[in-house]
Length: 407
Ligand code: ADP
Ligand code: 3PG
Ligand code: MG
Image 1 (cartoon, rainbow, N blue to C red):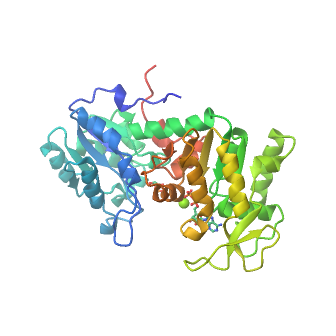
Image 2: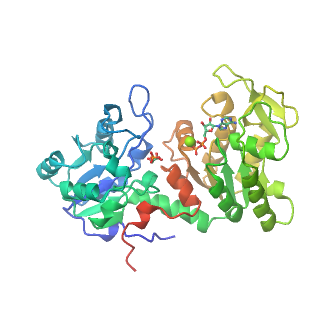
Image 3: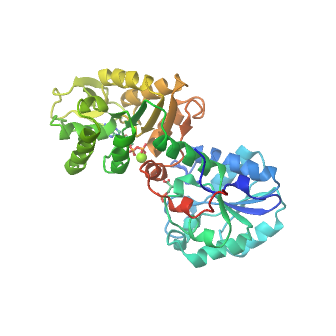
């Protein structure tokens, strides 16, 4: 699949000042240290490409959801990490508009990397404010704008939408790769395509599941999401996390599945036949395997069960392409990460299966699991909401706003 937007490869960027929007909204631990740098590493190909062309690279991003200036949400630690990864200095500017930016950009020679302070220190960013966007454009004096923050292109903000009214705007290499991989998998999947959906809530992922009913050859449901499906099917789930009020949605999903297939819906939407339970969610909890129908009042289903894990691994190993979004259990606790770990192992040891992994918690899990920085999989997406919206077939404002690809 080719990309419908112009990219940095289509423009003459040599020795130009280029403004890049990255998504450096990375998780920080209690000490304020970066606990996962996937989004920073994923931004390197575009930056390196621009540097190879002797461009002056000015990067902007948001971090968290601060209300005004908030030192705990500063991008300064990101500049340090980026500098380590690039093995060259990164100039950090304590603002994203105004004189500090003007001076820093003016002073820096071509081939420099400059990172601006958190865009969301200004409410104008999320308000998609034109005046704010124009100030960013003028302060940086950028000749081109490059959108490479895939994780944030589902937002229509000043740095994803309004900015494109002031500078010719193209896609970076990460955005292109994410888009082509994810949209390509939904539009022209390799078959059999097995979708594995898990995580906490059905309501977060309804439109994706609805589209997968059309697109996928099998859908395996795990995680707390499975508890909601199983309750809908009349199973007693004890004290498990079940999302209330989802009956109409699940009615719709099963009706669509019936329209697609005459028989054996349960072979198409595959639900657990057993679960791993504990009485509480804690480090001390140990897993107990229980068949459906045998859960006590106090049992919480925190992972898919052993027989279900075998079944899921078998289905997945028959696939040519697997889309996985949402952990199959409470994977923060190793005792309830068996399902997710087995799925990761199956994908990592079968490189002939195209594996496309999305979702913040799921990406976190596979990166911690993988000794290989995520390289054991075909694609680990840097997008949470953005990857879900793309899978659901929605238009992304931060992509739509870019220049169309040349014919
Ligand atoms: P992602 O961020 O990958 O899209 P979600 O946010 O939808 O995934 O879901 C991940 C969360 O769901 C994790 O915090 C995980 O602990 C939780 N979860 C998964 N399975 C269960 C379960 N059976 N019971 C309770 N929480 C669960
Ligand atoms: C994300 O982490 O999903 C993106 O960076 C967008 O952040 P937001 O949900 O705060 O807009
Ligand atoms: Mg999540």
